[in-house]
Amino acid sequence: MPEEYNIEIAQKLAEYETDAAASRRLDLLEITEAVVLALIAVATAWSGYQAAKWDGHQALLYGHASKLRVESSVAAIEGAQQRLLDVVQSNEWIRAHDAKNQQLADAYRDRLSAEYRVAFEAWLKTNPLTNPDAPSGPTAMPEYRNALLEKAAELNKEAAATFTEGTQARAVAESYVRSTVLLATVLFLVAVAQRFKIRSVRRGLLLVASTVMIYALVHVAMFPRL
Image (cartoon, rainbow, N blue to C red; front, side, top):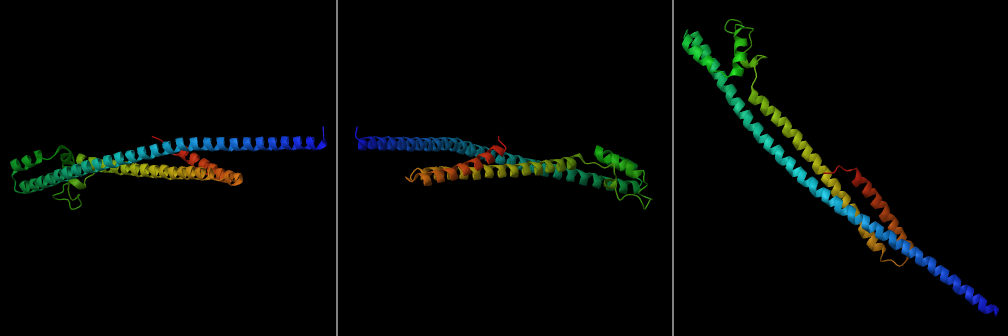
């Protein structure tokens, strides 16, 4: 067999092996791109789903906070009205007492609310009509309580906490939206990479896309979920 023929066969075998290796590398690159695209598609859908759920949760919390504030305002108004009524009746008791009209004084005393009467009785024990150092009125006594005003304060506190929780939910939703944008960027990079015939450029873009993808996926995994 002529030597030239042997050399030609060797060259063709080498070219075949090179083409086969290049084909395997291309197949591997395309498989990697497909895996990245699949991961990104799932992650993007999940991130968008969580962003929507957290937006809804935020709206629910804000609505509940508004409801609590309305209830707090109603309780505060009713409590203030009750306190005003008690103060007016205690003042009328003082006038009736000074006028020696015990029957009228007792009538005003009996009409005091149960909570206010406790403070009123404690206030009378300080001899307020003759003692200049006595508290200015029953509302200044440590025994004074107004359940409606206390309820209003508690509801307002709960409303503030709920509103803060809603603000935190909005921040989580915005974090998911940012991650969705990053994941969309990865999709764009992979799509652009597939347009290049130069494999080094294609691999470089895929590497960048994979890095951004890992960064986004790690952050998505760390976010709270509903």
